[in-house]
Amino acid sequence: MKIIEAKVIVTCPGRNFVTLKIITDQGLYGIGDATLNGRELSVVSYLEDHVIPCLIGRDASRIEDIWQYLYRGCYWRRGPVTMSAISAVDTALWDIKAKAANMPLYQLLGGASREGVMVYGHANGNDIEETKEEVSKYIELGYKAIRAQTGIPGLPSTYGVSKDKMYYEPADGALPTENVWSTEKYLDHTPKLFEALRNEFGFEHHLLHDVHHRLTPIEAARLGKSLEPYRLFWMEDCVAADNQESLRRVREHTVTPLAIGEIFNTVWDCKTLIEQELIDYIRTTVVHAGGISHLKQIAGFAALHHVKMGCHGATDLSPVCMGASLNFNLWVPNFGVQEYMRHTEETDAVFPHAYSFKDGYLHPGDKPGHGVEIDEALAAKYPYKRAFLPVNRKEDGTMWNW
Ligand code: CS2
Ligand code: MG
Image (cartoon, rainbow, N blue to C red; front, side, top):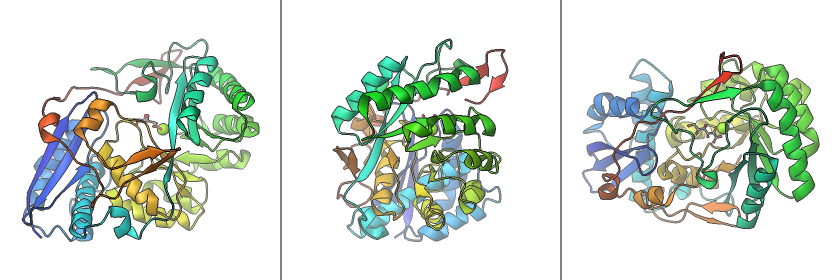
């Protein structure tokens, strides 16, 4: 089965998405997500200028060989641009293989290990009262797991709080928006949110929280400790993990479970974290961590160390990534949870998909492949619009982590 054509489709049905379509001489085709939020066109160029010419004429069934060819063969290994491009190729090829086998992808991976994939939604409010209302909406929708974020008194805006609520979209400016940050205000306020949520809703639901890389290890340790009475499912990205050893300090001080890895691209980015059992959940996902092939490797390694999968699933990960991820997570033995920020109706119309939500779980559906399509005519109606993620400064103007 030869690859005869591959093309990149860029569309902006409310936000930008980059999709790779690989077509074979047998009429079968597959699609893969290649979206890198705020840096989309760099992956388009990487695919069009440097990957697609090498794909034409190759045997589409040799997924592993093509992966190794693109990873080892480019010499410049790793990095988000390279790995998003490789991920898209890999996802499209698994889609083709599953379609050729006339099976949903999860069957090809080894079959379902569970009835559905538990997902968490995003509840965010400008203050604790508003976040409480948002949490109750997710409970009514049947969610078992809910991430909660709240505005901080004295700060004009902060990560995770938006006016869009259900369709929260951080990439909001043609130039980066600037946020203001105060660690002290955040550390004082956040435990109050979770105290209020547990008082209101009890302990039946899983509660999650994203720190978005904004603390130092000792500050994160303090937050983890102060959240212990509220028994979080996880505290996410509590420090930037450029230095994986940083998580050790946090771990030494708190039993609040730790999740990290949405910006990691390979197993090397989390090798120490997993091997030393410094985390509980790894957030790597199909689109940024080398596709199904490499995620399998990360998951297998993580399983040896009691680390579960908690794949990233924000709105900038397209429905194509979500479909592939759901097939993966229905199978993967060490599953934890899948993030699920709903896409807008416009996005869902461009990407018709077989997956569906019921009682807090998503199921990938039983269509051959990963179950997600792209309506190219509709996609063409939404041209690319430059959009940046925000940046973050401390109150005195110092650049900080977003
Ligand atoms: C986030 C994302 O979903 C998450 O946990 O950290 O909102 C993230 O900021 C965006 O996906 C960045 O593209
Ligand atoms: Mg996050």
